[in-house]
Amino acid sequence: MLNNKTLLITGGTGSFGKHCVKYLLKKFNLKKIIIFSRDELKQYHMAHEIKNLNKKTKIRFFIGDVRDRDRLKLAFHEVDFVIHAAALKQIPAAEYNPHECIKTNIYGAENVIFAALEKKIKKVIALSTDKACNPINLYGATKLAADKLFISANTLAGAQNISFSVVRYGNVINSRGSVIPLFKKIYESNKKIYPITDKNMTRFFITLDESVMFVLKAFERMKGGEIFIPKLPTIKILDIVVALESKAKIKQIGVRPGEKLHESLGGVDEARNTIGFKDHYVIAPNFETNNISTFLTNNLNEKGKFVKSNFEYISSSLENRLTIKQINKIIKNVSEN
Image (cartoon, rainbow, N blue to C red):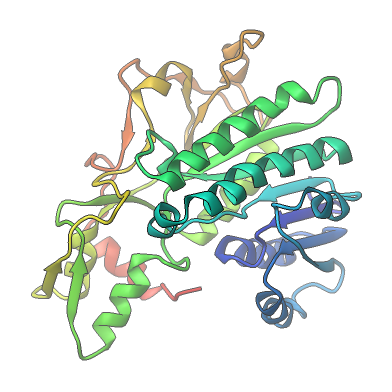
């Protein structure tokens, strides 16, 4: 699907974008990859990191901000696929700078949609987060709004062959801001006191490799309007510390503004539209003109079935909880990106 095509990634110099571009260069022969971001220094460093990975694929670094619709239109010229990864993601920063978060995460999403419609992009996937499910913080609320915009964009496409879908997943293990690299640095230092927000806190976790492969697979699976959710393991945050040091000193600092004790990737209220597949779930769009049962089989002919009416996909579940031994294995492979 991707060979000889042009793909653009907004926020392309972030953890996901960098890893995705490297993966694409190693596994595919695209016509062109466009990295759209506002940080020229990150673009400079990234250009040096990837310059010898694939001589057949043209790389274009495009400085711009998703807040600027005209700039997006220029960048989207002759693009086939878009991954929208640009966002303001730090929860405390969003709480104290709400207007800036809204401008990027909501108005930026709207700009991506209208630029894609005007330039007739074939498929657009927006990256979302577990924070968008029953949000209690501004970041999650803006991502929920963005998700709604992308899903509803399918009704704006009309007869045009343009599809919009969303991929929602949990914390990325070795991304910037991940707690595992932080705890690893503390372990390697002399000050071995680990700050824990709450001893009972749990999170979904996914590796960068897994997130990239899941997003790219979604391009093949999507019909338009779905929210794709991978089936993920969960971790008790305290267990990460125990995996590093069984008798570690812990300082409980309290839950930060806007932070949840447990995260959810699929709420009870979404259960009636949720379809379970072998390795993922799909929340089908709920439009008056839409027949949800058409999403029981995706474009790869994979078949799913509706979940139970009381289904909730929450990180406090013990069903797929990682053991200390499994966490240890992950920690050994982690380096901050």
